[in-house]
Length: 322
Ligand code: FO1
Image (cartoon, rainbow, N blue to C red; front, side):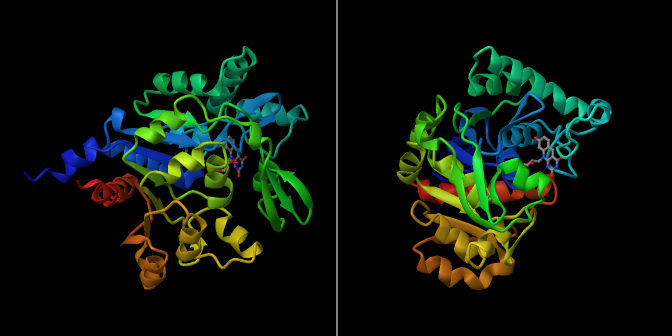
């Protein structure tokens, strides 16, 4: 019996690993193609920090806002139809002006901070917020424990947002540390959903500061390694669409390319998806023992996200063809 690709991909149980804007776009594309029970998105928490007394979780918010179609389409972070009255007054009162917090966005940080202060785990708060934002797929932070990414640079050790926003990713990076990760635990449900998955999709997020900190949470890497894992390259023709991943590779002495991203994950990957402009890397990718899928990986709009997601799912399904 020929099962339609549509029906078969719906039967797939998919876990997507995501962080940042690129990851959120593919996560949203996957969510548009899969029923709620078929997709769980595990999100990096390494970018999270305390600012003006508020707990800010940028990657969780970028993924959730994008899934709920309430994300600012120009920046990828923060909210659609945003206003900045509170932020303007914060600055007028001498508050930090380098990290912009919109009025709608502030509601998220205020509610989350208060619920954390009352002792609720981040994963439970995230579950409730997803429901209230009308998100039907499951979004889980990699851990309920804080695991702040430290960026070791030639200017010293920077907290992630200091590096990424305040210093605009300019300092030369030397190393990344995920503070306290050795004592962190996967959030409830993370290990179980990975174990139950038919395929794990590593979204086109920054390998160094979005995916590595997620995989570094004790237990996650070992469980992911047992599964069929496919990754979408965030590097196209040696550069990123957005963000410092290519610059980080260069500063760490590695030429950024789809091939070096594939090598970054090679211990766990079985398939690798990269852009047609890099088609000549096909043999290098196959020499790593990976199955290649070469396609247009640039997601400029909703249609692109869903097309790429469908191709990723069909590619992932080919591993599960019994
Ligand atoms: N990025 C910026 O470049 N400038 C900002 O002022 C800024 C504010 C901000 C507020 C909330 C939020 O969730 C994200 C915000 N970001 C800002 C983006 C954030 O630094 C990055 O999205 C992640 O940390 C990396 O993906």
